[in-house]
Length: 130
Image 1: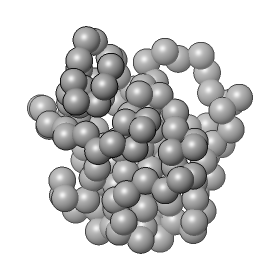
Image 2: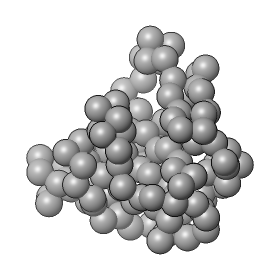
Image 3: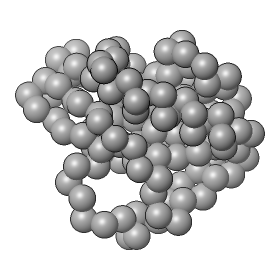
């Protein structure tokens, strides 16, 4: 499916959790797993999970893939950019996991500080639901 046909839906509590996690990790990068489902043209994100043995560094964040449980509800990752830059780096795109990637950037306060991307690095629009 192309990114033009993809509709990303974030639950409000997930949106708030991503912003809160970015603030809590600052000035380091933080990383989260996104749980949800892909149905047709919709990607619905309804939960975040801190990956086991995740690393939060000043220039990157990550986790050992081999430590993840077999969980088909994990559909992507979210990570923070303390620099305030919402664009994915080459390293972000090379380490893409799942269907989508969410980037949250400093100051982690509103929807202006969150961007969603597909694996080609194309920005996707998203909507919030209760």
